[in-house]
Image (cartoon, rainbow, N blue to C red; front, side):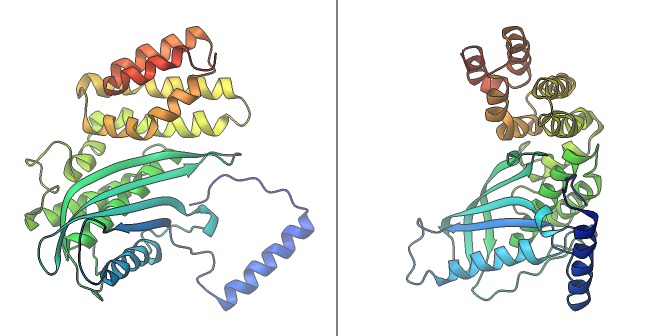
Amino acid sequence: MTLLKTYSMSSKSWYKSVLLVFAFAMINPMLGRSQELNCQVQINSQQIAIGDNTIFDALQQSVFEFMNNRRWTNDKYSPAERIDCSILIQMDKRLSTDTYEATFQISSSRPIYGTTYSSNVFKYQDESVQFKYLQFDVLDFSTNAYISELTSILGYYAYVILAMDYDSYSLYGGDENWQLAQQIVSNSTSSGQAGWQSFSSRNNRYWLVQNYLNPRFKPLRECQYKYHRLGFDQMVDNVQKGRAEVTKALTMIEKVHKAEPNSFNTRLYFTAKNDEIIKLYSKAEPSEKEQIITLLETIDPANSNKYSDIRTAGQ
């Protein structure tokens, strides 16, 4: 996967750069095949009182290596193209010597073309996750079988992050990664652990993927693409035109709202985007502000009070 970037260098400098890259590639065949994720990992164990906290240091290192050192796709990434994301694991309870209950906070962002700004793409808090871990455990994983709760969850969110990112660069570009996340759900259903089954909740890992692969939610995925590529990525040249494209993109969510009012996926979308949207429209014309407020109060009623602030913002 190659992001759209511009480089200003002479043809001679470019040629020398190519030769240098080729030379390093001969020495290190992994050059140019960087992993996809740039994942920051943090373990918060303050709520658990045990004599030796080195187990949590080991867990943090293991999760970091699992997310960052694994090849998740066959696509080629340069180091600069890796997806910025983070996982915060709040250790809530120690249920036994090797079993914990925790809350996972996952987020990801993507750069906006021609700027230093990064836009939130995914933000989710997965609560009451139970998993087993002993110090020096090897985190084994397969998309074809359930091996452990911890690696299934980590692998699942790796593919969700990839799917959301790919959807933001090309229309339905995340299909393959959504399908792999769905495969992990299918493998994990028999584990009996919460979050993998359709009947336990409408707001869980099962429904996140199931909805995104449901044709009813295609307008939400189309919005994901148009919001970023046709909207924000164009603002470096023309803010007003880019904002107009964002409005068109958000209007598409009305179709999802009518079919699935207050759906889990729509709420997740606005969890990542509502602050950014408010900032974007704070400098819009009054008529444009009223148009977007009316739309947002309909498709994202949970944040309607926040959206009303757009009227007075920027004055």
